[in-house]
Image 1 (cartoon, rainbow, N blue to C red):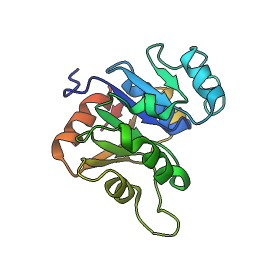
Image 2: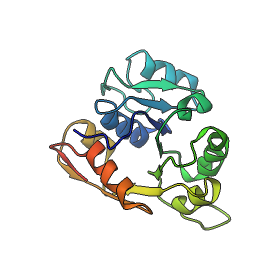
Image 3: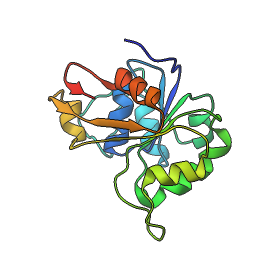
Length: 177
């Protein structure tokens, strides 16, 4: 499976969907999952899974986790953001000094920013200007995907190559991207 030149991915947000996307990426490319909760990061890093959001589901042993946002994004050549809309801008602002100038940023969050009405892709473009911005979305349920049930999702980006790379990284025999 081609990684499209991605050598390290960072997934911000260790809720059920962020963790699931990190679990899809980890077998294909070195991936670190950032959690604002130290206990969640410690559980994932120790191979205990994400007991807070996905109790009973195992995660790939290759998935790393941290509660240090700067460490999570430093050196990543793909940043996937699964932080809820309420904390999306804050997380990106904290990460911004550590994200490379051409690193694609992909949103998993649905909804609009309170106060501005911006979509999360617009927030990402505002906070991290000049970088490719993408969205991964669909009628996906994290638990069903972790169970290996058939599903489909859509990826779109301001840069068509980013969409193709994401498709290659995430598609499995059970997940059509």
